[in-house]
Image 1 (spheres, rainbow, N blue to C red):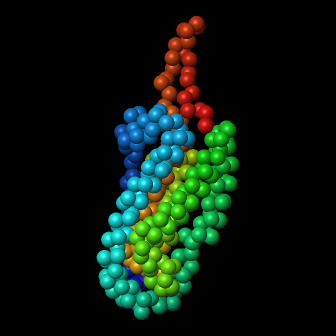
Image 2 (cartoon, one colour; image 1 turned 90 degrees about the horizontal axis):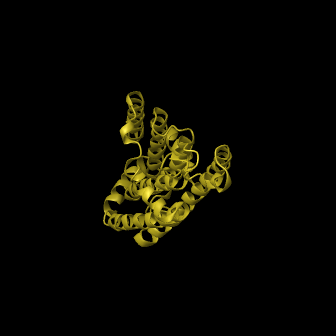
Image 3 (cartoon, rainbow, N blue to C red; image 1 turned 135 degrees about the vertical axis):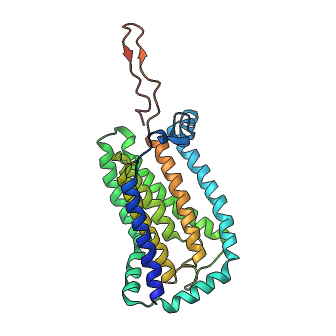
Length: 288
């Protein structure tokens, strides 16, 4: 029983120590601003200029969902070949997972990514972030965070079911409750991760020590969720790994869509006025 306690405590301490060290040593690299996604010639800029902000977001989102399915399906198919190892891990963990305080903690903490709890968190942040965006945006732009959070929740939910059908794999008892991929793990990474990114974005802290600390907290929560699913016998270990990959890919997609939809287009800069010779400023991307 103690080995399961240490299997939870030690990785949590490692994540906590690594996060603290990164916070203390973090120094943003100004040369890395933008990158290949959103730099002056980045992918997102090309999509915006070619298709427009909203149409480009819809097209890129559809393409990204297709890529995630294309990656997740083979992983799910391969997980079926891992079944005998899943059973070995499951049969070893379950008889030992009765440490009173840990079992009660896992039973409570595993609920943080349940559908009902996630819906409540999403509803709260949709309202809060919409009000926050209203202070800086006008028109339909104030609905960007609410639309992104709602889309993140629904897309994760639908793609998860698609992958379950394609993988055709049942989880531990009761049959059908836990299957590939782990939806709880994927939701925690993708939906909660998007909310963290939106908050960091509005506070202009995406490249600061605060951001490192926030992502470290998410990593602690994700490990807790993944561990609880295994400890409580709700998922095979390969399904949990699949949920980690699936959720991580979704989070990358949602962050890219946030930049595509919310970031103003880079303007060409001041231009001389034809009549007065004074600079004329162009506010590109100010309309949503």
